[in-house]
Image 1 (cartoon, each protein chain N blue to C red):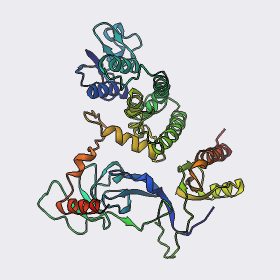
Image 2 (cartoon, rainbow over the protein chains, first blue to last red):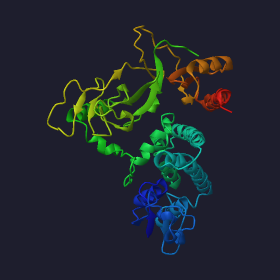
Image 3 (spheres, chains in turn brown, blue):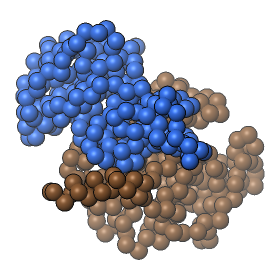
Image 4 (cartoon, each protein chain N blue to C red):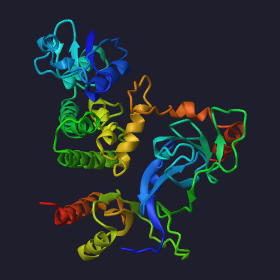
Length: 233
Length: 201
């Protein structure tokens, strides 16, 4: 499969991220949209008349929407149906609801980031307010979820493509002047995601060591103290 | 609502899972709050003394906080730098340390003070209960406190954390788990009113 890609776009990152988590190899073809404007060239418009990135060439079709690409990868390559719970009507609908929120984040937080990074024209204060409204809603959902033992957007033991779709815009929000400080449950959720095995990064996304690995950095004395403490309980 | 002098809640105890660095502010002071593996809670200036990067994008590793930028590590409690990866065999100079603030954990909340007015002040004694979701409001603390008093919400004790100019956070301890969602919705309504009053038309 071939992904028409740009390293700095969150929508492209989402597709790379999910393919990494699924262990699916993608060939990447970089489209220089800034400053090169290759996405407005005839050769690219022949593939995607919308002129947007990414485009996933599955061999059978060109998928011109990043959320469609996530659906395709999960439905085709995740036989456990963990990332897209197709057999569970309630959870599947919940995933779709969050994908719609991700789309709104794209047009708010995503637009604010393009405004601040490459000067795209938009009503920047309005975009930021819209993004904060969505983050407030997400914060409330995740905070009450944590209390009920749910780590992810859609109730269940495992994350879904909804988490991936929101994550890419949430984690880059500060590049559009949208602080995440008011959203502590959202911040913790981004860390849980970043601790998943094979979690790919992009520029501006910082790694989180797996908690198991971090434990090995404890000194010998600390390990002894910890084991002595656990023995008393 | 209880007004406290100097000391304010800046996080909930439950905001600090293993490895996490909580980000907040008090009276304009950026703070990084984290719990060591041994359970000690730290409230530090959210700024690595090396290059000024926010500690809150870093990670707590055992009993140390590790900066995201150059992975310098700082000890829980003292804030002293313990390890510089670029000079692994050298003991870091004693002057390299995080700026730390006093901490009291009480009623499921983490309290600190950043003002240097030398008044003692105390952390109020709070009744046991369930810590509510912190609700940020884009209005000054005094305005939010007045609105909370006027709203006469029952079933919880509230505290207002002055974040920065024109911003605050409502924290609360509810009497029981069952009232959490009702109180949360009541605070959201209050916030909508407060922010609507202030909206630029």
